[in-house]
Image (cartoon, rainbow, N blue to C red; front, side):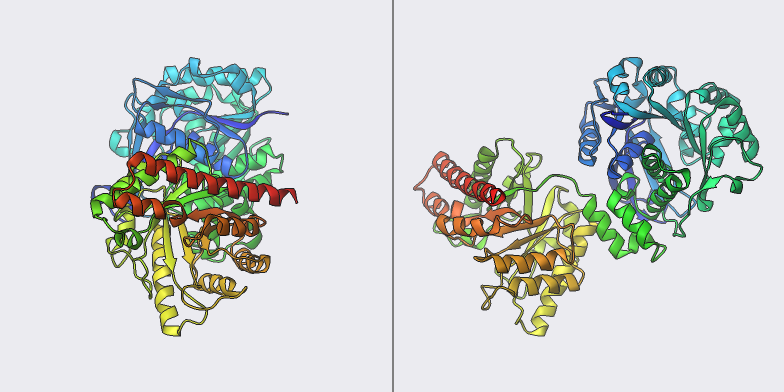
Length: 635
């Protein structure tokens, strides 16, 4: 089938507030991490990470949490055409925690929530027709209004030869057969729920559930009997999840022993968090099913994705990219606690980053000492000037992608905060200016705990003045500081930019940057971004890029710094750098703002003129870079 979409999931969407502390009661949680949630939403995200074109039909509130879900879906690559904003209802919330491998306390805040207001009007025939398959979840059969929407979608799917799948997704308290405090309950017998499910089973090509979920669908606590009752009601392929025993696919009659059914290999891993594992499993299963793989291979994908899910914090954030899945299936399990497998976690991090930053035009005004030394500087004037810098950057950006800023929090706090949500790439420095050995800004604290307060769109940037000839004790001190900051950045979900400037502390040749780059990789530092000095010949760039790619083929890339060079000199260096795809662009500061700042601080330039001059210089550098890249690509 030539369809625009591979799969559309239909039903729940929520914001999951996950307790950050492990092993305690929900009552004692001190902080939470925010993720998208709800089985259909999780499945759509997991499928998108595996390369499927997925979409979700749901409702969200007209508020911050609803916008977060929509924006996060877009970051994950999920089509949001089917997401409706409900002006009257709030987005659902779920508060949950990890007590141990068996206990996962959670509370559903779903009273009259937005996704339970899904109606037939939200089901568009042309949208359903555009997909190869739809997936619905049992929860949305629990309410007459949402059931009507699901039934309309299933009817349209049948009419347009769209495959149909059911995730039984039994949550007793969402069916009203368990209380609010029993969110972690997975099974309560209910004849009414069984009858409702059985009335729809004939509409599906694929039915997926745990043994307990098939118990409710089949009306028996004997798994074989329950599966046979489902088989009597449906010709669908039945996929039964069996926890540590893996899963089986039943394509015809139900055997007396599930071990006789088709199955895929399981994975001996440590269970850390069972929440969301079924949704990850379903995403992997969809990859195999829709790609036409045999059931053992589809189950292998599903089991592997489930293994990732139970090994990490959160639901959607735990799911693998296709590259990560393929690497895992080829290499195998090296340690059962996958979240502590550094090689695997690096691939997970690097292949699941969001945003297209293949072009980087960055106005760097994170300078502190250079401004503080100017005549007329005061902290107030410094902050005001950086607001002018931001206005100049936004004027040049004009809502387009591929633009960014570097801005500090000490002098430039107001500009830094104002930039949030603007679409700019935002880098934020951590080093104490000009320090050697490297020292960090005091606000970070000795343990870099201050990063917890950073906006998640901020990129941690650190400048290290280092050289291959540095004494061993100096090198060790600097590397320890960089690694401590890098690891803290990862723990806080922040991207990391490492800037190295060897020319200020020693002579450089073509191999200098490459040597330093390898030294940082050797200690386990994997920057998302490198910021390097302009190099005037291709050989030096080739060596530096080779050092990066042999250690991290998934790096974001390199930006070229400016060092207050005249525009003509920068233009010459851009022409050399632009020949290499891994060099994404530039991050230049004093060439743009230096002279303007000196005149503005002394009162020789008003705000409007300062913005205009900086915008003109920034725009000129952008044109020079873009032209250098075009010329390089045409050769």
